[in-house]
Image 1: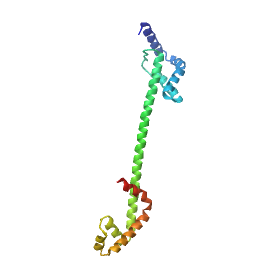
Image 2 (image 1 turned 60 degrees about the vertical axis):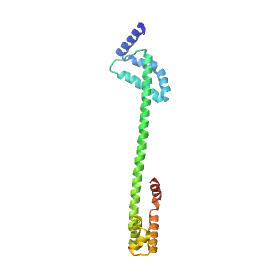
Image 3 (image 1 turned 90 degrees about the vertical axis):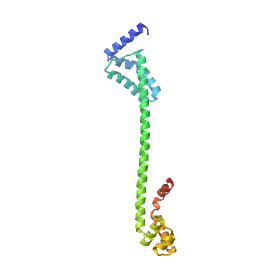
Image 4 (image 1 turned 180 degrees about the vertical axis):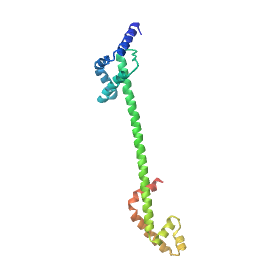
Length: 193
């Protein structure tokens, strides 16, 4: 860098750091060009305006001296560029987090909903089985829970196979009518396995 240019930059640095009020004038002088530049990057009028305000706010809030290496204009453009990129990166991270949070919430809600429906089905099933007549309930439990064949149940209870078949038919008919509201859930449970 030529010595004259270096001296000019040093003078600008000293002047701007000594006279913070000059930033108002610089803001007004460069606002439109910086706004147009920010708008190209963020493609939003309000956001572009906010990026310019953020850049100047950060400059004014800086406690340490501002060091400009090339020119004031280049410094401002680079600051706006960095502010816009930081904002866009932050938005991407925020969106990714929101998508993940929504997916987690959906999964938790679905799991909770499934568990509640399953628990409700279990309660209704127990209630319906307990409401069956005693012989019908016993035959159903031996068939479905202990997995005995009709002939084995008939032999164990001292009944005819035809009586066991009739009692099972009654039990299944009653279960179908009482659990009709749970058919979609039962269907889902059977095909998830």
